[in-house]
Image (cartoon, rainbow, N blue to C red; front, side, top):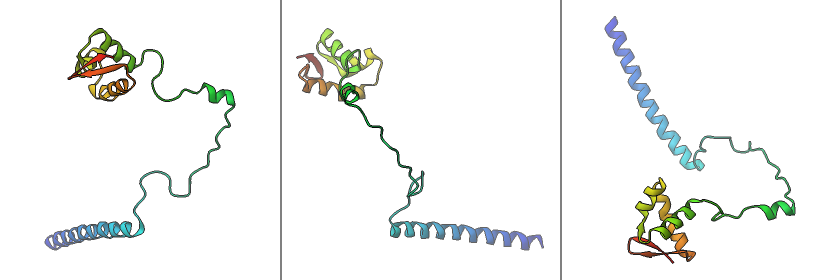
Length: 127
């Protein structure tokens, strides 16, 4: 009797696995036909509308624009290092600033476009 129960349970488990695989395939096919599934988050149509606060003309004038800010930004720090050590490379700048070099590969070309530095081989020089 125990043998019969074990084989029956194994057969049922195998059939469940087959059905799960079939269910996944059917869900994928349905999603492809219906335009895809939505990711996590709120369901469609349940968003709340936010009202934006009206800004006064003085608030608009005091807003900062994107780009370089005043003070000790990373770009200014890198520019200072280039001025102090002409021919310095990006990995050397990153090491002395204690940051990853990938950030500087974006910042230094921008400084070059602004005409503040120029490239000399692998190193950077003040313009």
